[in-house]
Image (cartoon, rainbow, N blue to C red):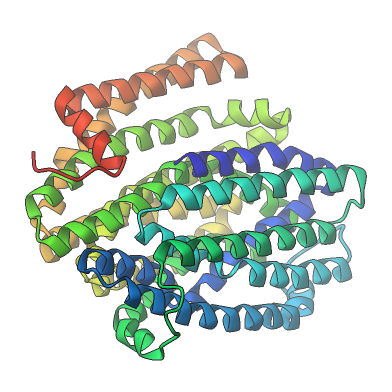
Length: 492
């Protein structure tokens, strides 16, 4: 989780400098790069999460050499895909600059050059997910996080210094980022191969064929997840001016703080669920699923409600612009609600994959996609950037209801409706009540931004304390923390 906190803080601290040195339209290009990066993840075909699952399983069965052979094989596959990505984006750069994005101050040639550099940047970073997931499967998430923090801190500092004292152009920004992306991938490759061991294991395409069935379903899931999470950005990049799209991406950056909890929770629980299922230890799985959800939901929802009720004050303190704060605050609230609901479903999703049922996750994604596309287009046309946020929140309400029902019916009964009533409802009420009280106090006192943020912080802490007190006995809470730190999971 420390890695996620640091990465979010880096982006939040660097953004005012990027706006100052590059402008809102150039930041819109940075936002488009983030969208493009997510879109191209579909080319992973589900191989990265498959590696995590395979390494966790093989470690339990004492088959580390098989893991090493799979990692070496996929390393070659990822290298070929990286080259293809750079070529594909370079070929499409002129068309995207002139026919898709709506730049009003940046020349088309500058936009096209920036997009071509995006392709190089993406290629340099492409293998990172493979080696990161190898370390996740080896229960070395902390090591991968340390590498990520070190590289990304230096990348942000270097980018700001180059823009401040060198050439202030979006092209230079992407060149610097590409160099650090290549460094990140190289370091993770060395570390992952050393941890997995058996570095003399040969590349073997039979290993790829062996995991292809699971990976193919994971690729389908990645495609549907891509559409679900990026439709708002794709539609808005076409419908609204580049400056307005930059504001939407600014709001998305603020809400990315939700991933401080969501990403690490999934990376921690997924291999643990896989290991417990491999051992057939169902009592420990049931206990871990329920207790970890309560702790996770308490922290997650406290953060979400803080963003919903105090987004304007946060942006005002951050960027010192009342106009930007007024514009992006409603967008942040909608995105925060949607992202909070989506993040709650990381636990059912991890259980589906650990149980070897990726088809269920794919089916849920297809059903949601049928709702997402028309809803996003209609609301974006009607309300602009705010419409994208409303669509994201609405779709994730449906996701919680549908996903929970199907997980309880087809995977494990303890993950169904009872999970929402028992393990989600209590943290929801415990964090919502202090948040509502804090918002009422701010409105009554007409509090300034500093006071509002302070009250919001106190409300969030109070909500977390209330949620933990209502959900756990002291012994159970200590046991859960021990599990999160990597100690053996025990039955209640």
